[in-house]
Length: 339
Image (cartoon, rainbow, N blue to C red; front, side):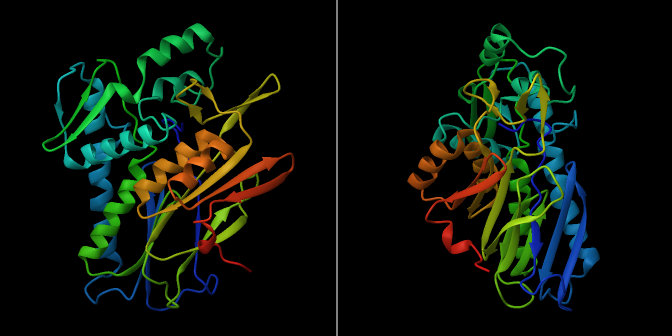
């Protein structure tokens, strides 16, 4: 699973006509959550200008940061992690919703997605301290695995609260909070009477309505290679979200072996399959954010089997030597733009 330094795979939002911007499109962008965001609005109401749009975005992003940032010691999730209590811990509705959904994905994926896996991620060198001098051995992994596990965490929606059965358990929401932020921003735009827009937070993309040409939004899926970004495929979205999770930039090599930043919570080790990236389309960004990680952990065979069973639109891009091969679920095919 992707840990504290998860790097989101950038998806480039494209208008159907290319790079030309129609006059009626309103666009803003900026830094957030260790990455960047961009918002494009089509046919904005008269009282919504760039400044008002930026204020709305800042309010949503600040709300998420106060609740779910692992880098702020005063955030809700940091305070929950610091607490050694195993009683119910009162939290905001936002935090309870996100943790509850993450636990649902954990159960459905057989533990491939796990928001408690941070200590294992750090042990393999993908936390704040960077690449370790010595790789963890079996004994260390066994000790770390005993400290983590989604089954040690509970979420309650009413009244909103979290509870851990192990006092030292900690939660990292980098694999699901950005998607929830996109969904909250989408709701904020709908409250402002905006029907046609595209939101991108670090590669978590959600599109509603049509682009400036009155057509579905076109999103480029980045080619999963360690080189300059180039499109691998184009998908068209209308009232849907898309997320890509991949292996091709965040890794290190040691003694001829490549160690991925994606840690399988079930084994405690970096994944070793041939899946280069996975692209998930769904109704919300929180859904695609979490499932992109889960399916990336599972790999092509097990991941596609589960995606088909759940009727999810997914593309798996596999590296076979120097070549890339893609496999899609039947539900993904209608979204692909054929040249």
